[in-house]
Each structure stands twice: as structure tokens, then as C-alpha cells.
Length: 214
Image 1 (cartoon, one colour):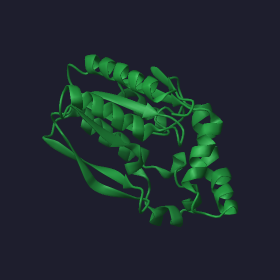
Image 2 (tube, rainbow, N blue to C red):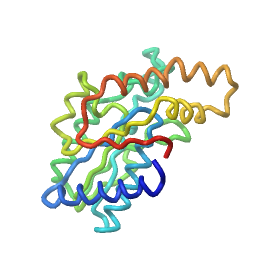
Image 3 (spheres, rainbow, N blue to C red):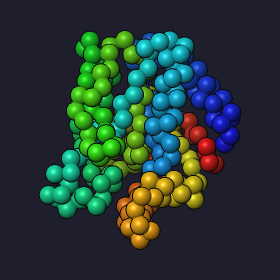
């Protein structure tokens, strides 16, 4: 997918969501495997929606609901950080329901700080005026509990379909500061199993965006 094609797809998608979100708050989930570009798509889509109607769109990243490293270490899960069982799915679901109800002037949400690999509580405010809530994460369409409990909270679902070789290359680039053996171990023990989980275990989405190497 070329940059121009990607931007045309985003513009078309923004127009669809604008129509769907004219009454009440509309929740759009952007799912896909690690390395698919979910946060980039969410930010670009929010920019398009906000350009048409300033302040109408905001993002809730699923990564804000990572279990803390202290808990992951205690349970022996630190090496699998980012796997489905290392997220507070119930907490994320409660926040989605609260945001969907939109009964408060503003709501503080957590955001994952990639520099320190820790979620920061109350790092972003989502005001009541937001009509388009975009939420993005690997497992939003995972077809197993407790992830399936999220389905009633999502109005529109988008899946990013990216070839395995592209995902592998992007994920390896995240660990390029490490020696080759450590990089390969991280990929094979956690990143790629998570990719395969999402690719094989996700429910069909309303909209599929296919990306060769955008």
C-alpha cells in the first residue's frame, strides 16, 4: 500500500465514521498484530476527524492496561509482557463502558509510556465533547474470553492485515539495539507467538485494511 493509497483509505474511513458518529459517541476499535501500525492509523484517523470537526476525536490505547512489571515479575510473566494474559482486560472494559456512557465532563485515561515500558495513570483527558472514540490494541477482536466481553462496547471494528514477513521485520527493528541472539530470542519467545495468536484467533472485522509495507 503506497502512502497516497493509505491516505485515501484513511480519508474514506474517516468519512464513514463521521456519518456513523453523528448521534452520540461512536466507539471504533482498531485491532491487528504487533507491528501492524495500529497507533499510527489511530492517530492519522483522529487527525482527519479533528480536521473536519475540531475536538471531535480522541484515542484510548489498550496498552494503558498492561499489568505493571511488579505484578508480572511476581507471576513469572515478565518475559511474556504483551501477551493476552498480561493485560487488565476487565479494567479496560470498564473504562470503555464509562467512556461509552459519556456521562462525565471529562475522563482521565492511562497511557503506556514506551520509553520506560510502564503505563501512566491519568495521562490523558477525554472530554465529553468527543464524539469519536478510537481505541487500538492487538487483542480487541480476539475470539476468546475475556476479550470477547468487549464486543458489545465496540460500534465499528477495523483489522489491519499485514504480511508476516513485514511484521517480523518491523518487530526485529524494535530490538535492533540488542545483540542478534537476544533479538532473536525476544522475537521467537514472545513477539511472534503474539503475532500468530492475533492472526489466527481474531474475529472478522467490519473493515479490513491491508498493508504491504506502508
